[in-house]
Length: 250
Image 1 (cartoon, one colour):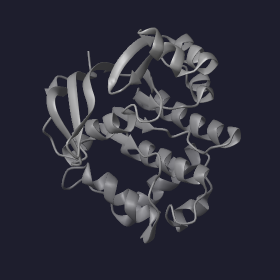
Image 2 (tube, rainbow, N blue to C red):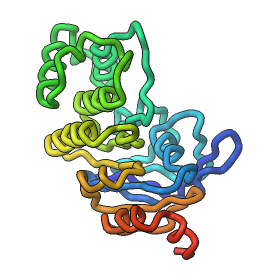
Image 3 (cartoon, rainbow, N blue to C red):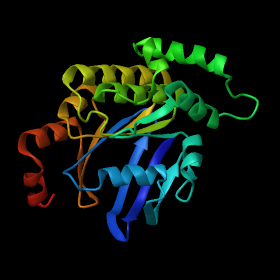
């Protein structure tokens, strides 16, 4: 079975161990929610999986579809099918959204199959229509002047164009009102239905999980997964908070 596996993963950031032995499996096509209090290591884990050089894997392994990618560079992980959606996407004035997206897509394609500007424009317009996005997006700079919801929808457009096998969504719901959240969820559902995408959702917002219905929920605390369960576990955390679970010793 195709899957993303973390085996006894340990991660240091600036000399401090943040992830302290995590085991996690994300099968193709499944949704795995990762929740925990602030500072528990959620974003560190996502960045380490994606290969950010600031996050040093000191022991353990990352296995993607049977291939060990623990030491691979971020661009090679992307070519193998990984994608990371940022909690706070950067604004870059002077870099058009279409130019950025075409470069990202072409970097994953072989020589001789890369899209020209004209070819990519047609593909971009089709994807934007599928996701219900305003055509004016294609005339704007990367996230420049975008609202929170627009930034997240631009991330979903990138996700749709790159068609990864596994997506790590780091608080994609952060800062969104319910209407904007629903739009992002609709984008994710359309992409997942088309590509059999596997999702690792990092979130604080139970409503996001109500919309997306995870197959498995993991609670992370102090760099370790302390409990796993179904979507009812997320509901329990919403009602009781993390302190009760952490203090119980589970």
